[in-house]
Picture 1 (spheres, one colour):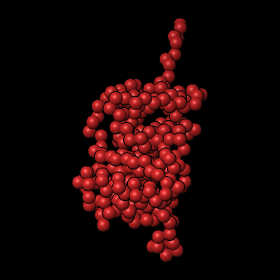
Picture 2 (tube, rainbow, N blue to C red; picture 1 turned 90 degrees about the vertical axis):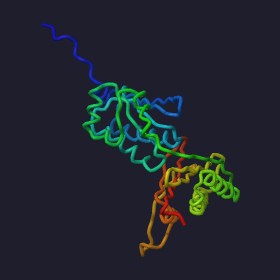
Picture 3 (cartoon, rainbow, N blue to C red; picture 1 turned 180 degrees about the vertical axis):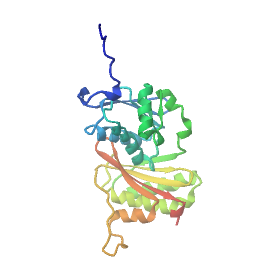
Picture 4 (tube, rainbow, N blue to C red; picture 1 turned 60 degrees about the vertical axis):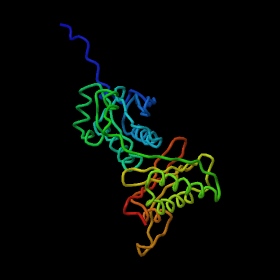
Length: 263
């Protein structure tokens, strides 16, 4: 008696022999980005997918959808890459992140892993894009910087004009200080350096591109109270700050000022 052909395995259950992870991207009308990883998601490719999501978020699309239909996930724990990516971009730039999986079994696996509590999963890309409730309110302005003293002048001018236009002048003093400090931290300014300011409901973010991936780590003096590094200024002035990798070997240094930071 013939046993017949065995059923093909689901993409989420394929072995690591499927090959190197490849990630395709496509922009959609309305400013959303769809990432389409193909291959195996495991300990070797985990960081590649996570960093690809983070780098897309720095460009601040309306939302990011990851279509996992061509992704093989041998171990359920690997799905945590999505919560890790979400954790890195949650404070800034806060771009909505979601998963599209047409296979009900894959969606069930993602649900069982607990990922859906942080990164929602939908049957189709269209369904994910239709979740407009998750699109954050943002006002944005950017300016290209030049090296030298002019960089600080141009940056502060942008901050003052943008906050005045948005009727958020109360943030101007602290944001000018933070903006100037970010420019000084990332000196020398290159032709690709860009300062951006963003306003939400009750906070303002100032961010700057820099041409290196240098570590930004807070250090403490022996007393534990005296500022000992340039990032301590950000810690004392801002609600939160951090860095995110950007394309072409660059990174973005960002700082969020809330109502409690108004001087």
